[in-house]
Image (cartoon, rainbow, N blue to C red; front, side, top):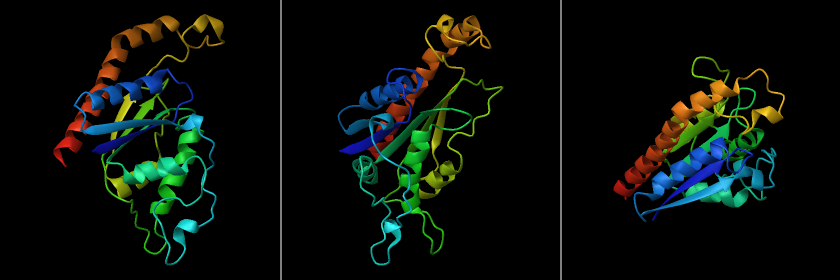
Amino acid sequence: MKKIIIIDGGPRKTFNTASMLKSFADGAKSVGSEVEVKTVRLYDLDYKGCMSCMACKVKGRASNVCKFRDELTPVLEDIADADGLVLGSPIYFGDVTGQMRTFLERLAFPWLSYNDYSLTAPKKMPVLLVETMNGTPEGNNSQGYGSMEFCIEGALGKPRRLIAYNTYQVKDYSRFELAGFSEEAKRNYRDEHWEEDLKKAFDCGRQMSEELSTNK
């Protein structure tokens, strides 16, 4: 059986990023029972970024999976054995969340060889990068996954990207100091685009499952 790992780098369990990733998972599961789908919430785990222990680069024992042991370890081991990977994060200050960036350090540093600067993961696999943001297609400061996208492409293969723009920040704007935003404009944009965004996520899940089921 093929396996897709979904990494949720957002803090809220039922809001924009989580909803997009759930829709992807529903699409992936709609194909049948040939593909297992597992979602991991980074905010539920106790872990740190790269500890610079260099254990992954010891001569004769080099590893392309992080050797530092904590609650992220089984997740990294699952990804090494997976067949597809989905990363999802809201965009804060133009970047993915700190939890996602910290996770990516642990995921990608063992791939990097300091002998020839090649990038080698345990195996290639399809990757989808999901972003949810307050910015619009016409105006945003998102750097997305930044330099880590280069590492992902070098080690796993060129990722696909799916972005949900101009998402709701809160459910009730009247409770917060958010006068710089028009709740009506936000609502109108959401009414026009949100279901379409979820449908795109669903279709991405179905497509990845179909590709994995075909390539047995």
